[in-house]
Image (cartoon, rainbow, N blue to C red; front, top):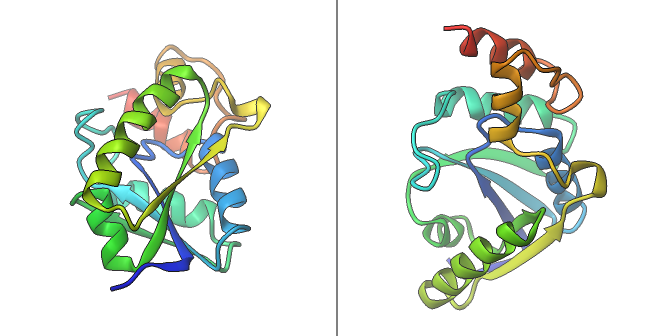
Length: 165
């Protein structure tokens, strides 16, 4: 399928989805006619996830339910292959810090070699989310920190349940 400049994907592990992720998704949804939030089944870089793929997909679906041009799908192949399957012309990612840039720059080069027709688009984190990460949220929650304003409703309760095991 030829890439369509109206379609983009926003891939991630979303373990769990944070308000920083939602900020990027909302902004990307305003840029494209169709945005596919792609939830990676087994993230190689991050290892085992706290939540199942189905639950992560459900978290994202609930959090984006008011965005008519967003759909959520799991994937378990190369992100560029998934983008090709969906006809997307862009992979949208959020950047918080220099460390994100270094990793994403490397991924961009690898993706570009595999699929030169698919663009990488980077959105800078909004200032209030520049420190926010799923791993940081999980660590705070593990030790009883308040994460209520860092994740969408419904996620906090499940996070506490899962981390108490």
